[in-house]
Image 1 (cartoon, rainbow, N blue to C red):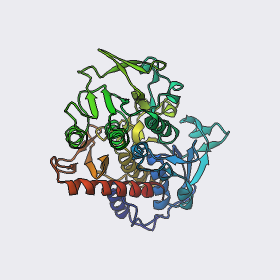
Image 2 (cartoon, one colour):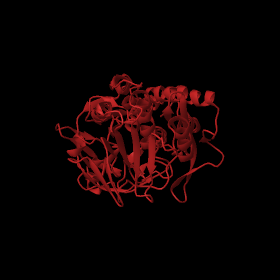
Image 3 (spheres, helix red, strand yellow):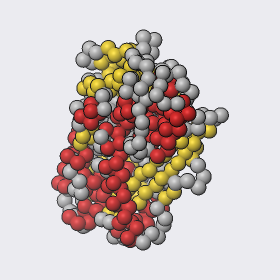
Image 4 (tube, helix red, strand yellow):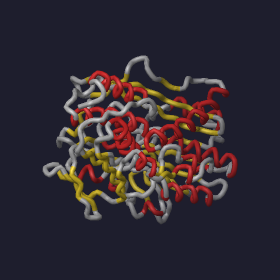
Length: 432
């Protein structure tokens, strides 16, 4: 049945999940006729599709994605500040085709667990032995009065890469010197936890150079955020945070930062305590699993419950949910986490389709970089294990960590270099 022993397969897939590397995978050549349908062409979906084919070329893999191009969200804040082009964030799916993945540019309208079938708006019907769903996040539009998908054309969320990010960049550039940018940061959990604060940093970097009398205000649903001490130290060093001349102001929920409504015509945000006027408003709404997850009955509340050992849905057998849409606590909802989860998931699927034992003790990793200014980067890394009894992913004590506080400038500059390498490597690993 196989040209590789079971213990070797388990060792290989376990290593893949831990290290997140592309090189060095031998391929399994197993039984034919199995088909996996992947819904969603983001980090989780692409990684799963590519590695399914690399590890077991006998499996037919169909990836269905509505957009013809992938627009990276991670590091897209560099586009807002002018440090990066949109072309550098945009990728076709040709790389997956070279691995033998069939890429279908269409929108999935239904996943039918009873028939084990995926249907699309274009009239396709794809049967599956396993279906991987990686739809990303959708917004709770109703959470902020006056905000909607239509209003987002003029008050962008810029939380998906591509056109929304372009709107925000144009508006920041059109703002007069001395103008105010207001960023509404969402409540937990949400995609890319450092994102709103990196965005404020990147806009401040641009304004420091081009519009030095301007101000960036973060209105937050929360009283704390990830890497907070490192962000505040960076803002203090670069943008005068905590002084009367600070370019960045963070308003916590306790200080009145929670926004309840927006008046798009007046350009006003209405908070619990005050109203805030801004020249540019960027609302990042509260979030939930992507729409198809709700249509397919994969959610419990806002997110999709899964078996953390395999990422198989606990609501429907043979459907696996990856990335931001899954309830993979305690991993953050990040691109790198989705990449790591995809490898754990496909190891389980290949094992199941070939009658092998699902790899025990999967490991998961996450890394994330934030660029606060020129030659000023910070990072966080985490290594996780499965607590099978509680079906939870938990951090391994002593593994991972943060950029140290009070780090010397040369190390912060090196973090920027690492961030750019991290971006290139992750893109290559998912679809190159």
